[in-house]
Length: 67
Image 1 (cartoon, rainbow, N blue to C red):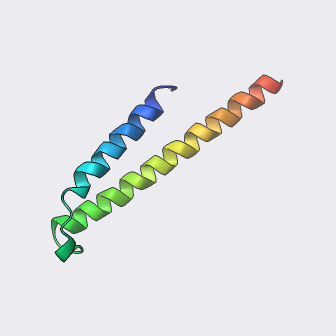
Image 2: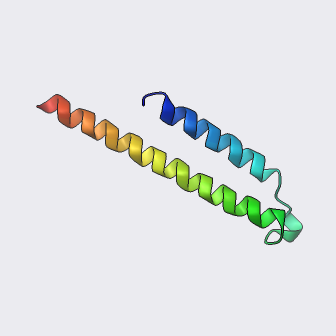
């Protein structure tokens, strides 16, 4: 679990970069640009969830060490 979360975050960041190249600023809410925006938002949510999960695991470890 220690290495899986950072790897997933790096993969998400790479996919965000890939989708950012598909954005067309003149027609941002049409066609492939809309799909890229939705995917970027979903990947940002995935990164946020991974960070929350990592923080909860750190808290869990600290609680175990206190006992």
